[in-house]
Amino acid sequence: MSEEDKIRSGFVGLVGRTNVGKSTLINKILKKKVLITSNKVQTTRYRIHCILNNKKSQIVFVDSPGFFKPRNLLQERLKNAAEGVIKDVDVIVAMVDIEGGIGRGDSFVFEQIKDRSQPKILLLNKVDIVGTKRSAEQRKIIEGLDYFDAVIEVSAKTGKNLDKFIEVLTDLLPYGPRYYSEDMISDQPAEKVVSEIVREKLFEVLSEEIPHSITVEVERLEEKKTRSGDKLISIGCSIFAERSSQKGIIIGKSGNVLKGVGEKSRLELEEFFGNKVFLELWVKVRQNWTKNELFLDRLGY
Image (cartoon, rainbow, N blue to C red; front, side, top):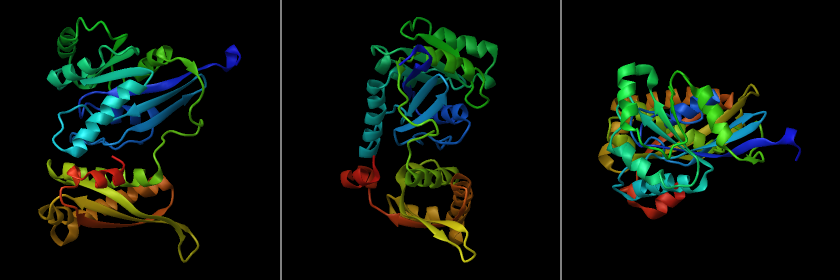
C-alpha cells in the first residue's frame, strides 16, 4: 500500500453511564438517525457498529449499553456487552454529562477503563446548556485523570466541537483497511432497525418503569406490491411485556396508545425504507422474559 492509499481506520468504543447522550452523538456525527434515543435510561440494548467514512479514514463507532448495576439476566447481559466493548476496540471514548454533573457513576466508568492500554478520550457533553462557571467546576473534578489523551467539551445536540473531536480521534487510530464498504453507515439488519424504531416510540409514550419490561420482535418483513403496482413493505411486530397488567397499558383505552405508537413507527419506517409501509403490532405477555435465558438468546441479547 502506497503512502497515498493509507487510511486511518479502527474501532472506537463509546462508553459511559446510561443516558449521557452517546446515541445522540453518533446520530449527529453521521448526520443521519441510526440509533434510537430517549431520555429514559437503558435505551441502548445492543452492541451496534456505526461507520463514518472519509477519504482518509474509516471510523467504526461501537455503541453499547451504558454501565449500571444489573438487577436481572437481561441487565447482566447488557453490562457484559458494555464491558466487552472496551476490550475489543482501538480507541476508548468516555462520555459524561457535565450539565447533570460528574458523579459516582462516571467514576465507576473511569475505573473500568483507566488501566486499558488503548488511547482514551474524555468527552464532556452538553456544553451548550452549561455556563462557563459550571464547565470550569466540572473540569476541576476531573483534574488528575492523566490517563486520558484528550479532554474535549462537545454538544451532541448542536454539534459543537464535533469536528475537533473527529480530528483528534482520527489521529489516534492506526493505519489499516476499510472494514466496511464506503456506502455503509451501520451493520444493523433491517429487522433490528424496525424493532428498535417501534421500541423507541413505546419509550416516548409509556411511563418510566414499563419500557424496561418490554421488547419488540419482528415476525414479518416482506416486500409486496399494491394493486397499483407500487412497492409496499409489509411488517408485523410482536411487543412482549413481562406481566399481564402491562398489556392493557401498552394497548391503551380503545387501543389509542398502540395505535399512536403504530402510526409514529410507520411514518419513520417509510422514511427509512423510502417506500410505503403496512405495519401491524401485537402485544403479547411473556412472563419474566428479562430473566429467561432461552428467550434472551432468541432476541439476540
